[in-house]
Length: 107
Image 1 (cartoon, rainbow, N blue to C red):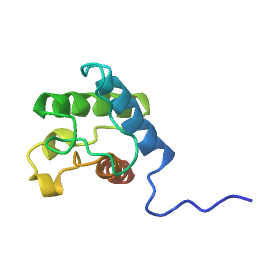
Image 2 (tube, one colour):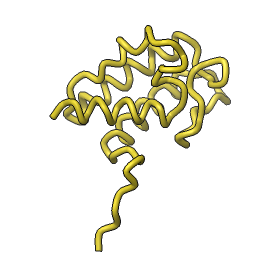
Image 3 (cartoon, rainbow, N blue to C red):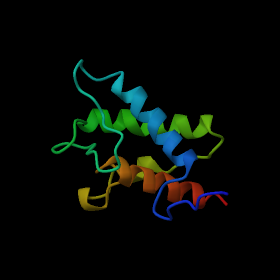
Image 4 (spheres, rainbow, N blue to C red):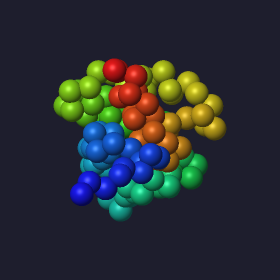
């Protein structure tokens, strides 16, 4: 019997894209700095470990991961100009939600 997917949970594809991007960016960070994978884990400074260059690297990595998964552009470059309260880079979960919405819009 199949289990119902939590309607608030990202799809496996969205999780895969974000996970791949996080692993790539984490490899660029100084030793000891770890990016969490929990949906509540912060990404952008000041709460998170990523400064502006880290966020740009995350955008590039996520767009590349989306291409690997057969998706078109996610529109994350446009998100760079959003205020922090609306930014998909606040937490892992907000980034997963943005990717999920972008994938749904590809219909």
